Image (tube, rainbow over all chains, first blue to last red; front, side):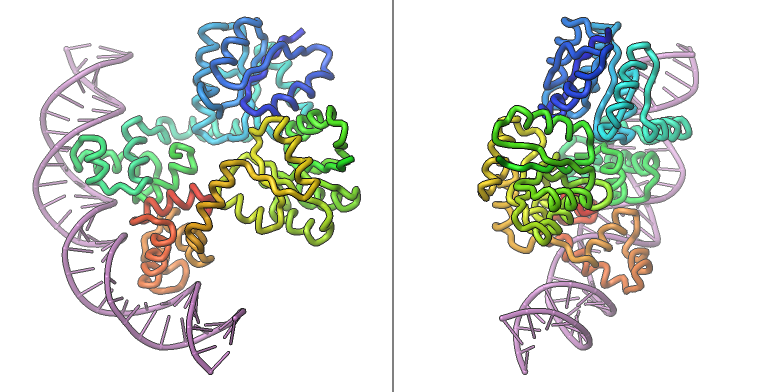
Length: 206
Length: 206
DNA sequence: CCGCGCCTCCACCGAACGGTGGATACGCGG
DNA sequence: CCGCGTATCCACCGTTCGGTGGAGGCGCGG
């Protein structure tokens, strides 16, 4: 019997998942949680075999919770189930130790098979996620901005000139320009406007 | 008895909603659909009182479906239930004739009361949606880019300089600059980078 | 019919940006 | 220990951008 814990901030989604697994003979939903911290507690206390984890949640997010679970309950397999499949969601989740990554438009049947596979320790990826991963190995290092670079890009997106961004970060204007040059290189663009666009497409900006 | 039709492309969400309304004495889920076109058919054929409508769906989207339903089945009240509350989602939905707009993190109890209110013909809005509406009346006309302006903004987001954008649209560089000035005015920004950022936040860009 | 919104175009100017080629300093890991 | 990545800073230069104040044409609706 596979002991499953559901972590998602939407009551509707939790209900739908619970309902779905009610029919399964070999799976029992032993707990639910509405945010990451609660999810880590429940999954640990209830000795979960598989944890269905949403990524975007208030409080502790799914990636942080996944990493925490790898520490606290190494036996629990984390299966990410979320709406988005952008690189900036997929890569951190896998780095954090998720054994699988599915999208919420998955069919009930697929989801069921994925949970069983995860329980056996087999990795499960949605096709589009696989594509993202392949794209990643082709361009190693690219697409990952440093924290500082993300700060600069966010300021630029919010309308700061180089001088204003420099003032905001207590550094020189020249440093802002250098950071921007690195950002352009990594994102494959030539100006701040399309850097901001790429930032949104890769979900680096809010 | 309120006859309810659920339109959402995610099987999981449909299941959760169906499950939720199973307990209600005065509400019966008479049908479901996975996209807008199917939703219009079902709601019309089944004489729905209330239609729970997602906005982002493959094929016909929720806004189009809502407008179609106002034509085909004026008796059916459309209650939008979606994840996003940005102006660019809210305003078209209400213009199209939705009687309510709720977010998917609504509690089951709220959702239940909203369906009953919608059935009575009372409008129902999530609080954050109300805020968007108020912000709209304060700045009438603002926030709506013309088609041409959206084209220009998209080109800028894709890395075009003014000259390149002009070439792409077969107009003069001066016209691009004029369009951009209008865009800055409407979006309340001062440069192309933050115009692109605003474009993504308001979901004008892809 | 006349206004209004939209699209197009023009000139001028200062400020900001992008490109290049450096430099120093720090910490981490092979 | 020394390389590598990160973060900081500098100078120079040409190009682009943003701001301002125009102008004309076109279509739609009051």
